[in-house]
Length: 284
Image (cartoon, rainbow, N blue to C red):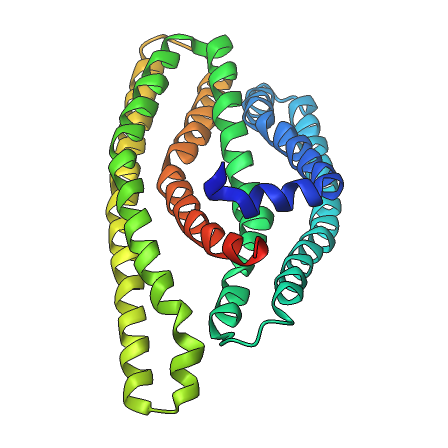
């Protein structure tokens, strides 16, 4: 975990607030996980001229809205505190050092990535992981032959992302090297050099985006194949409409989790590089 020193430190320093907000995320994800089942129940009941399933589904949606509202109000207060605390600690370490602080200012901007990761990305990853595991469990009870299809898709999605992670480590390192020079270059007030700097930075962002887009396309293709195969398999079993709707919902939820893998690899690669740079300042 040395590569993620800053991230683990932030989690330890703010564990109480983070525990509450991530607890709310798990509660919200649990409610959302049951939605395909109740959607199938509502569909079946409506076709039978009954409203019970629809009332259950609407009650579930109301609970999801309430929990989501509370969580979003609370987590902004937690994560803004995380960011301010980290930045102030970095400046406190450098107050009595008289060398060039352009690197420090650049890292201060990059530090927002930690807050963004904890508040937005990690939240989404938890929801996705929870959805993947929950979808597998629900599929086991609804149609357990689809479990092996999902496991196969997951394994196939991991293999290309090993090489993708190594490439992202390299590109993020080079991008952040250039970004650290930004304040010093701007201070020179040489327009040509400033232009060259931002053009170089633009190229790194484009390369990172191109690799990400290629990997994302591959994951989408894999997900599409999985959805098509699952629908074909359940159509042969003569299952009820309620089960078809529920199974389809869980397959889509599982597929959404697979699609997130390139994004997770990219973000962790970026944070790993920034963490090593910030760690050097915090431990001076």
